[in-house]
Amino acid sequence: MDPTILNEGIPLLQEILDDLIKGVENDSTGVLENLKNFDHFNIKRLISNNDFTIKLYHNFQIQAKLLLEKQPPGSQDRELIKSLLIIATLLSQLEEQTLAIATGLAEISQPYFSQMPEFLEEFASQVQETINRSISYFYMRTTLGGKQLVQAENQASELYRKVLQQLFEDTASEQGEEQGKEAALKKALSWLEIVRRIERLCDIAVILAANGQFMGKHLLSW
Image 1: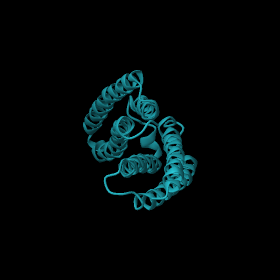
Image 2: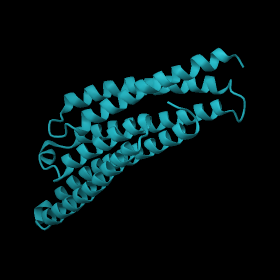
Image 3: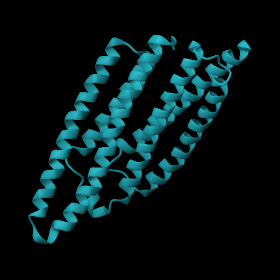
Image 4: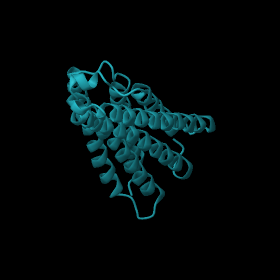
């Protein structure tokens, strides 16, 4: 195998992956940290950013698969490239969920939007903190970084339970009014979909960190 393929190929993958990580982190921040100020201008901007980030992902896939074909079976570099592909796929899943959240928020009618469930904004902010901690741990993999990630995830999980509880209580209260049953259920389902997708972002971020830990421990010193 020509050594220049490896010497130039993997650093290129790392460079594209770095850009992909930055894109995903910026896009999720744009949605999760601005719930109260969310509007249709934001969704258009996010969709534009999302297109760029998805293009980075597809470019990464192409470069990685081309490089993968040139590695001998069972080689450490082949395993590294496969691990990088898994990382990139997780990042694309984060991006897909972020876009789905933004689209869902844009589709919620203004009267419903003004009745955002209690704790939702705090929950979304904590999930963003978990994503940030995950990415930091992905690169640094320090013991302190791992503890901070676990703490952020636990806080997000607790807020997730609070949001769900408040959402169900609000829905039950509104359904007690004869005229508001259908509207209350529709609003609850709209918000529930948003909440579940935000919680999914948290799950993917933790998986991303775990894969980064494995890759750093067994395959390279990043």
